Length: 266
Image 1: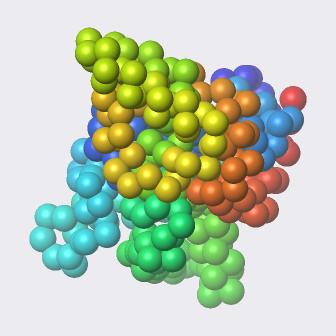
Image 2 (image 1 turned 45 degrees about the horizontal axis):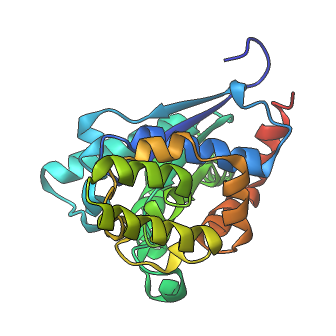
């Protein structure tokens, strides 16, 4: 972290339960920020993957979408809301919340993911923050404004069908992962052919259901795929104008994020 100047801090949240999710999400967020503002000094951005297991319990395997307002899970969900609210209370703090579209991009109108997020997370977070500010004596008009600004700093990360639709765009690293995974020449050949097709048309992966089942590496190398995902490939995928472009554009429309990035220009 560079000394002096403004800093951005991102709380990272993901419904993925795999061990690689912090590495994956940090890389995706860095690439998104670079895509939005190439002049931003990303050495002045820090990332905080949530590691409290009580909070993680509310996120794993889509559980946040199916929560019940009683019992142990509800306590985990309240801790999740409190973690987000505490973090975004600071004006230079943002939250990246990853959940999958769980549909091919062409069928995105049938996905309930965004609606679930608005209903289950954002609506309850709005109420949670407002109650906290009211308890602290913040007047109604100021309270409404502060609640909205805090909610605006919670930014969804939504790949379709799943995060592998973005990671598997790193076809060079995916070929290596498949070669390491299988000793059977015909299996590796099939994976290479699939990678060739995806590399030739960056729009294909968003239309594949159960993406990770399409190659022998599955999700075993997600961290390596994320770590070596290049700016140029990332930009090609954005140019394909599917789920990565939609997430990037959603983030770019956030005036508070653009202002924060301008404050950390090189």
